Image (tube, rainbow, N blue to C red; front, side):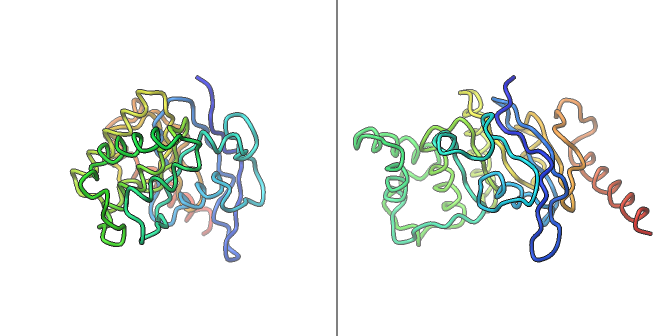
Length: 245
């Protein structure tokens, strides 16, 4: 399979502290790829580096075979950050229309696309309410709709299940599986292991800025992802304590 994302030896410091230590992994076309780690492990920092929101001091990031997120690549990428900044004075429909206008849709085609997305994320009845009146889960849903309005080939989601109730989580998981079936590659950060176990093809685990599991197939993980995750994190901590003692 073709490689659509490669992260090679990236190093990043924030506030005088090294938060990413030679991070390496790659994602192949058509995968749902889970990037796992405890809170503060470096998941969001890594994604920000990939998206060009912050710049690592060293290493290389390739998207669709090119270094960095080129202008051409941006047209084929979707992104939903963990804390999406939304224009709260807009309605859900207006917010999607605003974002869709960046991608060259005709007026009629965009309106049809918006209707499909609103229904797909369960917001058709709230489409004309202002975002200021949306719950956290509803904001997550409209943020997800925004991230796929351009039918991206590569989709980045930072904690996409955050704030969702069980129905919302099921809806998002079903949507991600549907997108994979259409050829979309999906990379998402999370610490909710049950969601990963049910839909992901491969995972990497980051802990304290280090990749401790790289591109492992879920099929090769025996005994459940939760036990595997805890074992790997605990083993790394023990090794680190031994090294530092």
